[in-house]
Image (cartoon, rainbow, N blue to C red; front, top):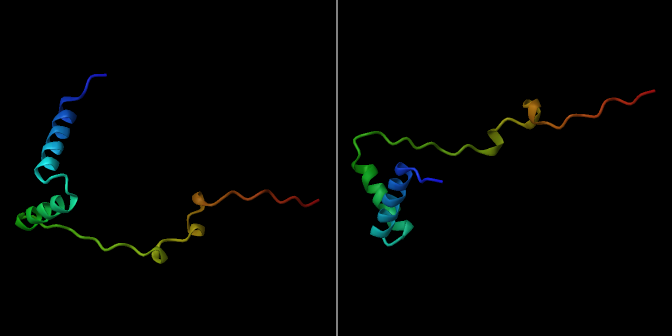
Length: 73
């Protein structure tokens, strides 16, 4: 299969970027935070949702198990 040139370019850039920071994820994240702070745009940070605030399975019938038919005689 032929490799997509855009995918190849992204992979090459990613490898160079990781090499620049010594493949250290902490250094890469710190560099991204600096870029984020210097960015004129707004960075949206959403708070995590607590599981207790998620709808229960009963409120989502398509996710519940089907019940066996009533076997009365």
